[in-house]
Structures are given as structure tokens and as C-alpha cells.
Image (cartoon, rainbow, N blue to C red):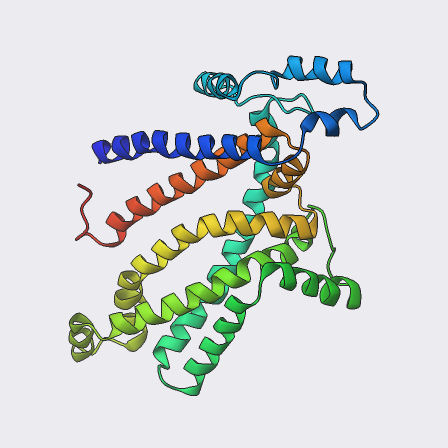
Amino acid sequence: MGNFLLRRLLLLIPVLWGVATLVFLLLHFIPGDPIDLMLGDSALGTDRETLRDQLGLNDPLIIQYIRYFGDLLQGDWGTSLFSKKPVFEEIMERVPATMELMFGAMVVTILVAMPLGLIAAVNKGTWIDQGAMIFSLLGVSIPNFWLGPMLILLFSIHFDLLPVNERGGLEHLILPALTLGTSLASILARITRSSVVETLQAEYIRTARSKGISELQILFRHALRNALIPIVTVIGLQVGVLLSGAIITEAIFDWPGLGNLLISAINSRNYPLVQGCVLFIAGSYVMVNLVIDLLYAYLDPRIRLS
């Protein structure tokens, strides 16, 4: 287990290096100049050049690249061009809000997907099964950028039940979590149904039935645990989707998280902050997949980490 963990952690290095290099190059090749945004159109040419020299933007691209990675290796993620705060500190200030939103979306996902998938699997081939799958298909088909405004129109403006924006208590989290979690819940419900249906047809389930074990015990004690492996896999893979979906959802609800920070950094060509945000998101995604791999061994003793 120790060797496995060490190997996976070492694999993080080339992955993060590739992501950081790609983002660095793309940011420097897209149109736009942070100096224009920082000083405005009326700034003098000498002031522009002075600020460029101070920020190192007049240096050749390869020099900027080497300097960036040299600082990164020393734990320095850079300094935000506008707030002048360390990038890592600015990211950490936004992470709790994004984690709160993702946790809320995951709760919505599990509360909706697991019962829906189980009910559909137990009633396979009936109108209940078909209704559940049609419901899940609708959820997959509705994009976040449409669902979010519709929920705001219905629950915030028409019924005046829930706040429309900003972070606060539970009432502020409900609509963003529903927006972010609906699509994942629909996908997970279909995976849960397929996995449980396949497991219920296994030989050991027939053996359990022949011993007179109740259907509820068979479902929750024997079938669901073995059916969890593909479900956990999908949850792990969808973390990246949640992070990317959170960017849209945070923009819709003015949620002060990492996604909102990334959008504002892109709009202002704040290179160090964009690089830091993408690096943090990529690292989080890889770490979650590592945890998912470890969960495999717990859920299925046949799987051994080599």
C-alpha cells in the first residue's frame, strides 16, 4: 500500500507540470493585456513600460516560464496582479465556499440518485422503472445555465421562498446545490439501476434467496455493497465535472467560490491567479481519483493494489 501511494503521488508531478505548462502557454497567446486593464486606456506609455518591467512581462516567454516554475518549486504560487496578495492565500480564501457548494450538490445527488436507482432496479421493466429513467433522462438533458435561472425565477422571484444570490445559511445553498447536483444525480441514478440489476442476477444472490433471506436484506446487505464499485467510480470521475459545473453555477448565483475567482481572473488576464486556480483544480481532481482507487480495495477484497 505504501509503494502504491508513493507511486501515485510521484505521478502527480508530470500531470501537474503538464497542466501548468499548457495553461501558462495558452494564457500568454490569447489576446488581451493585463496592463491595459490595470492602468486603463488613458495611462502614459512610460507608466505602462515601467509596470511591465516591474511585473516581468517584458522578459522573453521562456524566462517567464522558468521563473514561474522556479517559484512554484519553492512553494511560491505567485502574486495576484491586482490585489497584490499571494495567489495561494487568495485561492484558500475561496476554497471553503466551493467545497460547501460541492458538498451540497453531492448530498442532493445521493439523496436523489440512490433511492431512484434502487426503486428502478427492484421494479425492472415496470412503469415505475420507465418513469424513473425518464425522470433521470430529463435531469441529464437540462444544462446548468438554464436550470439555475429557472430555479431563481420560480423559488426566488415568483414564490419569494429562497434568496437568489451570495453565500449565507442553508437557505442560500439550496438553489445552487440543486442546480449543480441535478445532472450528476440523474447520471448516478442510471448507473445505480444498471449496477444493482446486474448484481441481483448473480449466482450468490440466488443462493441467498434459496436460504430464505428477505429481499430487503439481499438488496442492502448483499447486492448494494457489490454494486457500489461502479457507482463510486462514477462519483470520482464526476468530481471534475462538479468543479467545472461549479464555475457556471457560482457565476449564476454570485457564489464567492473558486469558480467565480477563476472567471474574474480570466477576464482581467490575471495570469498568476488563473494558473494557480487551474493548478489547484487539477491537483484536487487527481487526489480524488487516488482516494477512489483506495476505496476499490475496501469495497471489493478481490481487488489488490499492485
